[in-house]
Length: 366
Ligand SMILES: Cc1cc2nc3c(=O)[nH]c(=O)nc-3n(C[C@H](O)[C@H](O)[C@H](O)COP(=O)(O)OP(=O)(O)OC[C@H]3O[C@@H](n4cnc5c(N)ncnc54)[C@H](O)[C@@H]3O)c2cc1C
Image 1 (cartoon, rainbow, N blue to C red):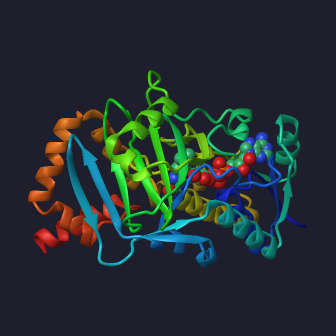
Image 2: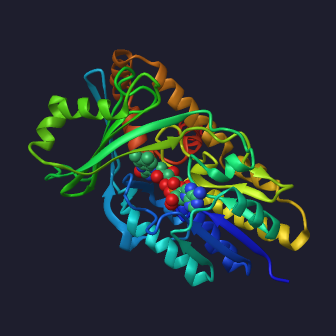
Image 3: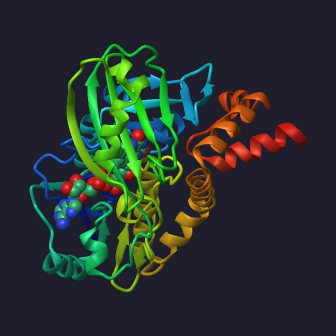
């Protein structure tokens, strides 16, 4: 008997699930409502090298830039964290999606593009085998099977500008509780002459596009952008908490990626956590088909691997969301004086705050 899985959504999380299931001999079929998933590009893809390596994607053809660190700005102060070696890659999201489609198909998965899945399809798919909802933060799969809500959503607005980037190795992050409540504004060099400018906010009282327009009027940002015209301008959302439930073992439904809320709340990055959840989901499904039970293990396995780091990310997000801009500026100055900027330059890890803590305590007490 052949075992099957239907995957809703051909983003990175859905395609990695399909690739891994197909490799294990399971009939994996992916559906995406878009003819070209990954377009329009809603964001640059910053991923740590260790994070992207963990997903088994040969990403060199998708990489547009290497990052060495970030400068954090708040209340008129700045903290520069710059490593000697590159710490993260900036990936072309469209190329990354195309690569993931090729990998899934090469492993034997079937990818159906331009196919929107609705409630009746989901019932039929769940009757035939396992269903993976990888259909983003507004997941129709989660809604149809009543898997609860995502407690916190960030609204984003971004555009890309053709400019000569002064230091393509550094990202600028602007924290301001009033202007960008709940996240931050960023300038990310996608390339030496392409700069992404964006804002993320969680407040119902602030409009992300208005916050973005105001950022463009900032003197420092204005000087960098000059007369450059915005290209690829769009709004999007980022889920900032894990969804109420990410698996329904009885109906054989699992959620991965943004649909599950598997995003680092401190930064809004979801490629690595969502991709690793896809690996865990595929492995759990393969074991389920071998033994006939164990689907509910998916959530426990995900939480064991990432629960503590997700908690730390949420705590960091809560902290900077609560602190006023000027106290935050003072904190940056103190961090600089206490050598914390230097410590993070050497030992920082954007995916794993728990690893930073371990390194800190080891260095202090070992
Ligand atoms: C502005 C911004 C900046 C970001 N920057 C980064 C970053 O630098 N690094 C990082 O790691 N992450 C970043 N993220 C987060 C990252 O983009 C997401 O976490 C990641 O794309 C989630 O992948 P996914 O496969 O779960 O979902 P998605 O990429 O959202 O894919 C879901 C797919 O499901 C399809 N779909 C939805 N409903 C249906 C349906 N009913 N039927 C069929 N198909 C359907 C959609 O068409 C879509 O293709 C950023 C996000 C934003 C908004």
